[in-house]
Image (cartoon, rainbow over all chains, first blue to last red):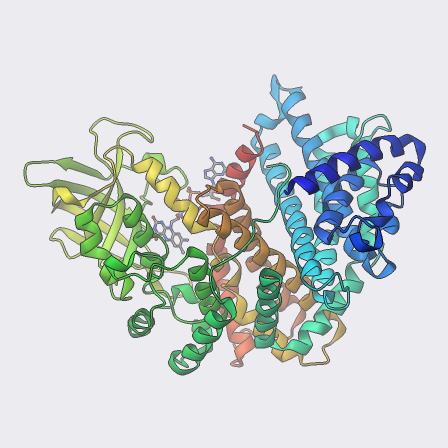
Amino acid sequence: MSSAREMLCDTARAVFAEAATAGIAPVEEAGFALLLVQEEAGGFGGDWGDVNAVLQIAGVMVPDLPVAELIASDALQSAATVSLMAGAMGEALALSIDHVNTRQQFGRPLGKFQAVQQSLAVMACEVRAVEAAAAALAARLDAVDIDPATADFEIAAAKLRANRAVGIVTSIAHQVHGAIGFTEEYDLHRVTVPLMRWRGEHGNDAYWAARLGRQVAGFGGQGLWEALTIRSDKSRTE
Amino acid sequence: MQGFALYPFNPPGDVAALRAGLRNWLAVNQPQGDIVSRANCWASFDADFSRALGAAGYVGMTLPTRYGGGDRHPLERYVVIEELLAAGAPVGAHWIADRQTGPLIVRYGSEEQRQRYLPGIAKGELFACIGLSEHGAGSDLTAVRTTARETAEGWRINGQKIWTTGAHFSHIMLALVRTEEGSERNAGLSQLLIDLDTPGVTIRPIIDMAGHHDFNEVFFDDVLVPHGALVGTRGQGWQQVTAELGLERSGPERYLSSHALFAALIDAAGADPDPAIAVLIGELTAEMWTLRQLSMSTAAKLAAGEDPMVEASVVKELGNAFEQDMPRRVQAIVNCGWDDTDDLARLLRALLIASPSFSLRGGTREVIRGIIARGLGLR
Ligand SMILES: Cc1cc2nc3c(=O)[nH]c(=O)nc-3n(C[C@H](O)[C@H](O)[C@H](O)COP(=O)(O)OP(=O)(O)OC[C@H]3O[C@@H](n4cnc5c(N)ncnc54)[C@H](O)[C@@H]3O)c2cc1C
């Protein structure tokens, strides 16, 4: 991560910590609405990679505040939601790892049991997949001047992939936590309930699958591979 | 594993031109053959094709030029192999030599071994197989019992390997053997490069459930190979094999083996697909796109000299699941008879039958998940 982006993330963490109790006002005051606005126009001059990083933090710290709406236009909300989801899933995984390494049953930490290890491995794969989808979508958006129409394929693929991970990630996270994860007091629901909500917002599975499927049908069997490679080679060079 | 970012996939040079050159070459040189051989094509053997591919400079691309290689960047090779797999080209003959034996000889081999084997590998003419598994050593490779004793004349090998893919057409085997008498577990193991025409080597076919002869049993009966057959450091076989497996797990073959079926499904669906089929195509596309990003990122990390053991395992786990899921879901939605002779039906049947092996070879699903769990800090 570049040092500018690291500083941005540090700021985001500090501001979101305040916003967690004070509401959206500190986020507005800190100027996050200007994140994507060009420097010449008095903005921060950030790219979607920055948005992705900030929203992953927002997805953990302030999932209920309209941070994505503040930063990005309506047409980019599905892309923004992928980043929120990636952040929340990373947190669900971190909480789960921490829990199974601490909680003891049958005289050992839960994480020593192979069944628990295999579940968490499955969960980790889903989380990695969504993080990769969010990062690849960011690369594409930044290659096409953050034009959602030109990144339609990647938005559809990334949101659909994130949606499909929600069931696995939330169910395994809750399963390994046992009853404590089902309490209001414990933090897990602060990420799992938003994940359940985000799956249905800005396009559920059926919506994006049908759209993406029709687009790919238009490419044809061989055309799909050509489209995939042209699009990623372009993200790479620009 | 927290805070995962995609590693940038930045091969040097003009990637689009590299793709275009290869696509043009394939348009002329790819055998038409049976459509079914395009599925799981890294198991499709065609020595003529491998030789032609080598002559065109697409085999041994990353090997040093002084050994006949192309001295190309590993990510250029990645682009080439993903193109070959997407096209369903019959790359099975040289696949293992190109993917792992060649790079391993560069990394650990002696100068003599490099000169002896690498030029043939780069020409697409010298084929290799992997001798790890034995009757008693499957998931638990530390149970290897094949022995090699050092004598005045060289190494004397006794024992047996099993499930050795391509041993029947390979020239060499890179075998994991026990060189230290009385050693146990992962100590005392070494890697030997064995010429398979050495007296005392017997190769017996094992026919798989698809009716194919891909893997074999290989017997070693007092086989004598020279001292120079040792690869790398005596006793370090375990460490070397572990590094080798990293090369094996995250490549594009982990999600492109079934691409011929996916392409046939898309073509059969037509430009205005049935809504349920459109949904299936959409879901498979999202998974494939994501897997490609993960695989490219892992390749970039490997190319940068890092050891992405966990990421590589994530690619294998998700890729295997994708490729096992695909034929099942296609069958669930497309109406085609088991014995139908159209392309889609034949690809479907072939992949339904082939797919159980995906999560066995190269590390079983359970072993791979164990590696990921360890990477998470469990165990
Ligand atoms: C098509 C194909 C090609 C192959 N090619 C080669 C080759 O070229 N060279 C080569 O050396 N080998 C090859 N193999 C062998 C392959 O590496 C082994 O099949 C694999 O390592 C598993 O070993 P096994 O078959 O003995 O199964 P086992 O080890 O007996 O395992 C059976 C089942 O038990 C599970 N299991 C085992 N131990 C544990 C544990 N501790 N915890 C939880 N579950 C466990 C496994 O995951 C698996 O599901 C090939 C296999 C196939 C199917």
